Length: 233
Ligand SMILES: *Cc1c(COP(=O)(O)O)cnc(C)c1O
Image (cartoon, helix red, strand yellow):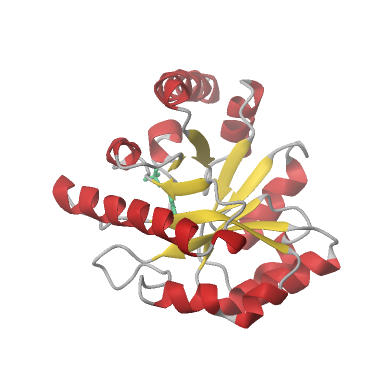
């Protein structure tokens, strides 16, 4: 009975958020980290296919247990030594924050005979704790010769997380800056950004601002599934 009620609630929230996003053509990644298989299955049954995970082991377990047509998005911080576990199936890796990590993703994608879609994470928040390239590093990244050697990578856009703050002006400014960077990079490096299509920004607390500032992919967890459990399964 308890599970039943929870599923109804998830369906209701999903339908509401979806009806907000669809007319704006914003893609929804349902962030299912630390959420149960039943909760994911509930959205799957409504036709949703894009789910976001932060932890490699949890992502692999869920991929094992759930239908194979799910598009799994890796949105957490990814360590190079763990890339190999998700390479066979991961749909989009959002958090690429170094050339070293990208090289490993390319190598493992080649082994799996896949072209791996990735987003570059840009550090836009004022907190030290969030990962990503600094705005200054990104130009030298795009100019590096190594990047041109990577045949099994497709860079599809940028991702960023705003400062955790009540101050919506700070958040808006950070998202706006990322959008401007997105447009500038496309102009400056057209041969490397043919496949640029996603600006991944916005989560439960700030997705409305993110969309106003140009986001076309939001990563929403708690607004769909409710509070997360504290520890991984
Ligand atoms: C957990 C997480 C989210 C979702 O957070 P909510 O506040 O639950 O919507 C989005 N993006 C990233 C990178 C996350 O780690």
